[in-house]
Image (cartoon, rainbow, N blue to C red; front, side, top):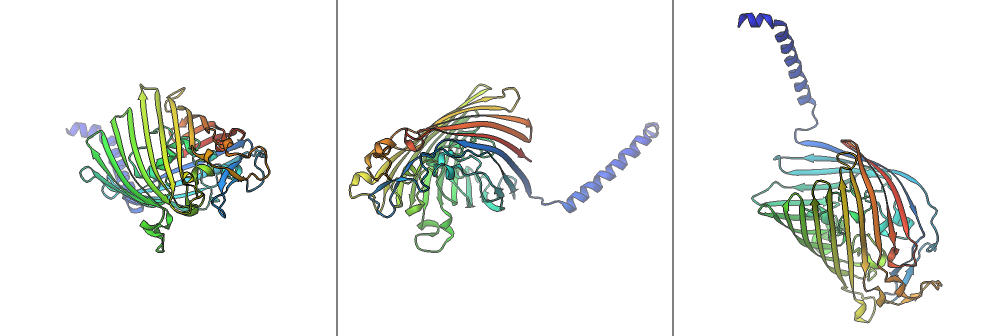
Amino acid sequence: MQRLVQEFEAELAALGARIDNLEGRVAFLEDNQFSTTTKLRGEVIFAVAQGFGDVPFDLEIDPNNPGDVLLNDADGDAGEEIDSITTFSDRVRLNFDTSFTGSDRLRVRLEAGNNPSFDDVFNGLGTTRLGFEENNGNDIIVDRLEYRSPRFGGFRFYIGANDVDGDNLVSTVANPFFESSGTGSLNRFARFNPIVYRTDTDIGFAINYELGDAFAVDVFYATDDEGSQPFAEQGLFNGDLAAGAQLSFTPSDAVELALTYVYSSEPGADTDLGDDNSGLISRQPFGEATTNAHRLGAQASFRLGERVNIAGWFGWAFAFADSNPISDSEEFDDANILTAAVNVAFLDLFKEGSVLGLIAGIPPYNLDVDEFDIVNPIGNDDFDDTGEFDNIPLYFEALFKFPVTDNILITPGAYVLLNPNQNSNNAPIYVGVIRTTFTF
C-alpha cells in the first residue's frame, strides 16, 4: 500500500487539488445561484413572411340595425390586390418554471414580439394569422401566469390568471407535431381544433383525473380578462364564460384520442366563435348579440411505425342568440359552425428530428349563412346575394422542420386559403414563411 501511495503520489496530489477547486466552485454557485426552485427556459423566434392575394369581402351584422346583413368593407379596398410586403419579425419568450415539490409547476412567462397581423391586411380574416403571432411592439409583458399541482391520487389541479385558453386546460389536444406555437404549424388555425380549444378566455381553472393508465377526464371553467373586474356582468362568473369537459384515451405512446364538449356564453361585441380563426360571419354570426354555443370536438392522433404520424379533428358549434336577435324571424337566431382538419407528419427525413408536414382543413364555416339576405350590397353587383357566401373555405399548408442543432430549428413553409370567408368569388390567399426557432 505504501509503495502504491508513493508511486501515485503526484497523481493523488493533483486529484486533491482538483477536488478542492471543485468544492470552491460549487460553493460559489450556491452563493450566487438564481434560485434553488426555478429554472429559466427561453425561446426566440425570427421570421420572414409575406402574404399574397386580394382583400376578401366578408359579411357582418349591422350593429345599428341587427336585422340587416352588410358587406364588410371598412377600408373600401375589398376585391383589390394587396401590396405584397416582405416582413422580418421576432417573438421572445422567457419561462420561469418553479417547482416546490418536484412534480408541480408555477410558470411565469415574459413575452415580447412584433409579428405581422395578416388579418389586418386581409380585412379581418383570422385564418391568415401566424401560429406564433404576438404583436405588442416588442414591449415586455407577463403573457402567462399559471400553476399545475402535483398528483393527489389520480387528481391534478390547474389554475391560470392570465392568457388561459382551452388548450391549456386539458391533458391533450391530440396534435403532437403541430400544436406548439414556436415549433408547430406556421398558421394559427392548424395548431388545434379552434371550436373547442380557442375559447377567447384569460382566467380559468381545471381538474384532471386519471382513470388508470389510459383514460383521463378534464373538467374546466374559464372566463375572459374581465373576470378580475368587480362590476355588473363581469367578474369570475358573470361575464364571458366557457365551461367544458374532455375525455381522453391514450392506450399507448402511438395513439391519442379526445372527445370534448364546451358550453360558451359571450355577450355583445366580445362574441368570438373559434377565436378569430375565420371571417366575421362565422365567429360573430349574430353580430353584437349575446351568443351562446354548444361546442363539440373529436381529436385523434395515430403513430404509424417510426416515420409517419396522422392526426386530425372535427368540430361543430351550435350557436344561438340569447338576446337582441338579428331578425324577427326565429330561423335567423341560430347557426351551425363546422370545422375539420387532417395532417400527416413524415419524421426524420434527411436528419433525425426533422418533420415534413402536410395539413389540410376547413376553417370555421357557417352552414346557415344562405339564410340571410344582404340589405346593403355597397353598390357591388358581384355580391348581391348571400348565396355567394355559402362555399366551403379550404386551407392547405406544407412545412419542413429542420433541426440545425438541438437548439436551433429552421422551418420554411407556406399556406393557402381557398374560398376565403366562404366565398368562391374571393381570390385565394397565399402566405409564405421562414421561421427560425432558438431554444435554451
